[in-house]
Image (cartoon, rainbow, N blue to C red; front, side, top):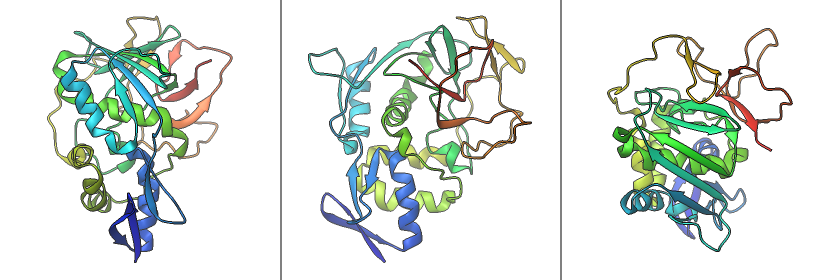
Length: 270
């Protein structure tokens, strides 16, 4: 059994296999594991995020849920350097639950609101930023205020630790939930609650898009609905004869823009 530490205190001892699973999972929680000492470390220390458009209660919820990461938040621009700037507007948007526009391209994110046995899909509720930026302006339906704090947590973690993400698809949901209960709950019970709800059946509030292709309202591009795709696997290598599957961890530089938006094709902004 391998002892695992948090703030220099042993919180659990794990068999080697579970310890290796934990090492893969921690970056998704905004944490890192020291491979020599087996101590869990904050992954976002010295990072500062400005979030505008939230009331004080919602901003506090985000701050509490991510306090274990070492990150700091504010609701206004300050003199100090901010690593990430997020703006949230609550609007009567179409059924896609989160939208944002960068470089004249509008992206639609549809978070997971139902049970999934695929940890890679469930761990961040299927919220994956398809483009890299230090500034995002999100539009969210007013009915989704109950979820926005959680969604912003995942967006924040991805913005800083995406390069540390590795595939967790092979980890069983039952093993994952055990690590959430025995490890994450002792570090931050608020964030752990988000993760424990990953497998709770939640009623879908939105109707499905009327067709396979949904037009973007802010550009003349199209967003392809993914219901006919194979199960989400961001790490699966692709045959050249097949359409490239979503890889949230691969940064791309493309000199050409096409008329079709692939929201899961990660394109780095200049």
